[in-house]
Image 1 (cartoon, one colour):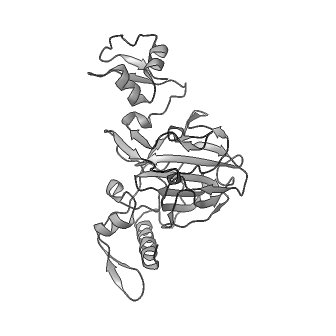
Image 2 (tube, rainbow, N blue to C red):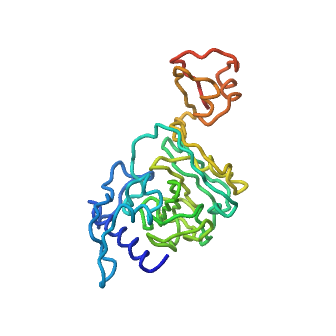
Image 3 (cartoon, helix red, strand yellow):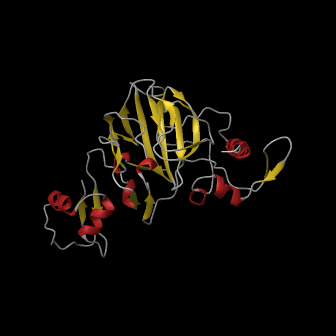
Length: 292
């Protein structure tokens, strides 16, 4: 990144933060992100990049400098995540073209998976590490958040060109600033146990438009590799299991077992076994099927 480009990115981040009502206040939002947020909206206002010149920041500049700007429409450097409208269509994300396009943030066993924990949603996967272990960016992207949060501790959020965002929480030290550009595998911080944490670990989240995706749907945590180079996001991608560990799907007109299995991230064989039906069974509109 050139000096001029870095200055513009930092100026844009500062401008977005100053527009938020939370500017200058402690971020008291809970794990998983705030319920609402004033986001940075493109205004085309002049942004001073140095004492010698003033440039007008345009939508074209945003599209060039900000990853997935056409998807988000903003570059919010204040709030961890914001609630956005539900995803209604299928979105195909290209995660990697080569082995060097992705990296496991830390090689450690899972201490707490994505899902319900103590009756509350746990929106990431916790991975064991030792304080001071390097934590790497999962994909190439640009740092949108680098701050201290009372729940996440030292936390970094990176937005990637395909619209995916990754969060790295409970770090003992942050090594990047807002606007920094990262490649997959670049060290962004050191592991720790800051914030609301009971021991050294990495809280790792993957989100799209603020909606949480189970990181284990993207990564094989044990092998430290991507499960697939392409990932399809559907409305069911963001479904979380209930506290009892079960979930259901209401059959709609035109549904098939194969289509339901794709939407719910399971298999036809699993649906048949759980619901004690045959793959040739006739589905009724309004019928509820257990999916896990």
